[in-house]
Image 1 (cartoon, rainbow, N blue to C red):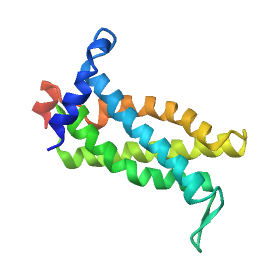
Image 2 (cartoon, rainbow, N blue to C red):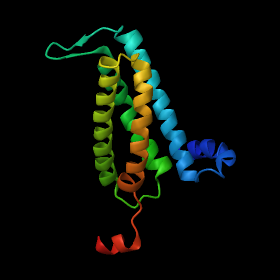
Image 3 (spheres, rainbow, N blue to C red):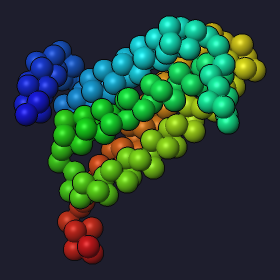
Image 4 (cartoon, helix red, strand yellow):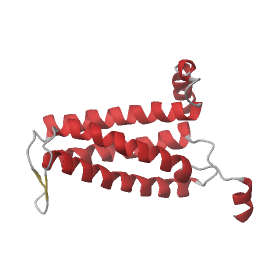
Length: 165
């Protein structure tokens, strides 16, 4: 299984950051950072080399190249992000896997809408270069995502919550 090698690799880099953040936050930053880097790289590749900065028409709907690139990179990074979150970052969560997946999906859908809105506004109304718009959007969405994943998707039930369930 990949879990232990990934944890050893991430934890190897943790000691210099120990005084500033807990291990779980560091793991979130490492896993999330790697997934975000993959997302931005895929976005750049789709935008520049697959869609060639041109409108993508599926016949029944057409997408601006920055939106098509965003959607394609999302389809790849969604499952990777869930698996890293579930097994590496938030492995102590007491929620059942299907509940985690549903909640993760809900938060990711909110992230998707936020990504779409901010990228669209920054590119089409403020004329930012699409990759720069994606970087700015990512900072906003990652902050929201960390808080919601920690306290909603992968929360650890308290003793009083366990009694209720």
